[in-house]
Length: 119
Image (cartoon, rainbow, N blue to C red; front, side):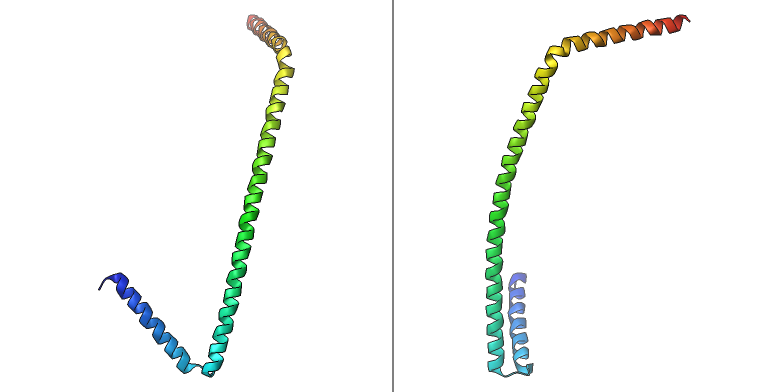
């Protein structure tokens, strides 16, 4: 016999034995046990239905939140792009003067280094 068949047979035999032992050793009558099992089955069914409804609601909420997040990220990206472009437009006219100032500073530093070396 294969391992899968042995496992299923063991599961079936074990379930049957445990059900028989439970029915024989229970202090309640068969009718009370059936009522209790039925009530617990209904409770379990209600719980599973609630879990299903909550799962669907959670799925919809996640979907909605991800759509909102995508829109927010797109808006933020557009705003950052506009800000960078505005900054470039602001800096670009002054870029040449900034380079000239940097060259003057470099020249001044070289002159200062030469003077310090000579002393």
